[in-house]
Image (cartoon, rainbow, N blue to C red; front, top):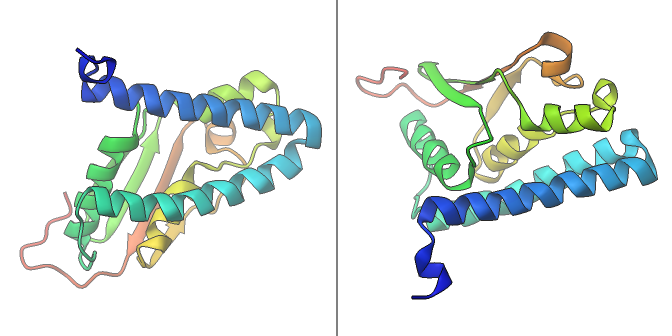
Length: 177
């Protein structure tokens, strides 16, 4: 039996995501040491958003997702996409408390933990939301996000919560959850 066939889908996903995230962390740490945290923040956030725009189209193709024209379709796409790209150490939750509203929330953040270990968390600009926003923009989804990103919410507030408001037309019988 080949090595690829021996791995479960979850094992393979976790291996690939962990490898990519390790590279991301090592790149960030090396860049911060060589160029300073301020420049690294700018480059990191720009790169994450650019990568996410390409990633969204790849995910859309892999999931055979058509155009996203409703809140229900967006929820389905985001839930399916994160099922593919989220490893167990990524502890955020997406909830949909009402139509056209999505809440991102986490009590523990791998980026916060990693940058804290580097001793630079007080100057870190969160790049996590740039991935989600790159997806939304690549898919042509209009949104408003609050609060504005200022540094790291986990560092400043002890938790990370951000809401996304969309402007899809109301769906027949469309409850938020």
